[in-house]
Image 1 (cartoon, rainbow, N blue to C red):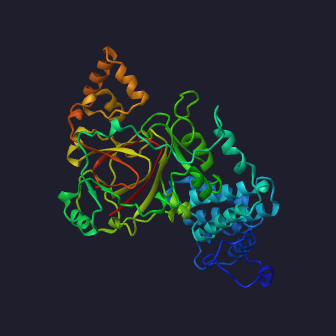
Image 2 (spheres, rainbow, N blue to C red):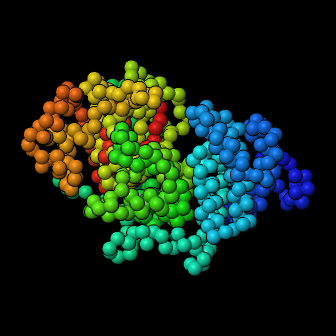
Image 3 (spheres, rainbow, N blue to C red):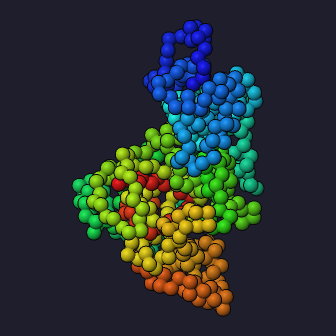
Length: 485
């Protein structure tokens, strides 16, 4: 919103709105017109007015200044304490900046617009402008689709191919390599499985706290387009859905969020794919840190991917209350919370608990999961509040990946797993010292009871609140979690 411009409104065409239903994707001209209209029409009870008259007076003429002011406000306090007015100001400043980019149309105008819009979604969720921003991405996708091959931006035509070239054919793989050795499919203590579980049977399970136990549901999501006609195991399809890889995504870098050196950054989807998903893993030379698109609501950001999946019916069951002393109370959810988990072989979620019931749906590749019941907590050594005041009590101090490499009796070996092979080869005094140090620090851990499983495409894992779980990708993997209560 900006200060009204009466002359412009008088000459504007019939009013339209962001909620207009388009029978097809809007053209660039249509989305520009719609955006001008939305930004110059006051909305009742719009919190942006709380930013003050000075900011609103320059919003249209100097959106960069307003964006800098709002950005500062977004980072002055913890995010949950940020006032909505500053999120609104950042959003509208971005949209005025986008309009300016369409007028200038310099060499990288499309890339710059995508970056502006995605940063708005990631930083603010674009309050009151969600539909408008979504229409922008639809229009930009259409703009790319009608480009002549020679007119497409260089990044779309050249960059993935150039960066993927590593001493071999300059080709993008048709699908992600997701085979795993048959030798690792043998499990000591498998999670119970059920094929085509009925909704009434699952509701009965959740109605009794004593049966709040893990379960792998086979063939639960075979109807999802993401597994067939709109395949997420196709790098080409995912790049297409992300505007040739231009969309921005937040990723974690490092083996685990409990490790020193772990960090987060925002990058383009193409960079993530090229650096972490499509790079050869057979050579350790110049191998980058592990990158993981983890626990991100990718589907609110990119609704075209949301259309490839559906919320499993079991997520609408009504579970019985089962208070656990160390699990935080959480508010009742109106709808399940969706998060994406997309990464290469070797990504890890360290041993931790969550306060919600969870259905983890496996779409691409394979994951190993290990689970410990709440009554095993004393042997799992929960962390406390860390140095900067973050409560880490839902995460174990035990590095389970390392422990499985040290102790064969609780191990889960992978062929070609460099770290575990290195530990296995070191059978002498050094390895014995590591074991003694581990047992001294975490007595009883290796005797804790657990269950384990392997998730493949089409499988879903039901994970009750309070259950400790460790997850490791055995191949390039794409999963979706559905938290509900």
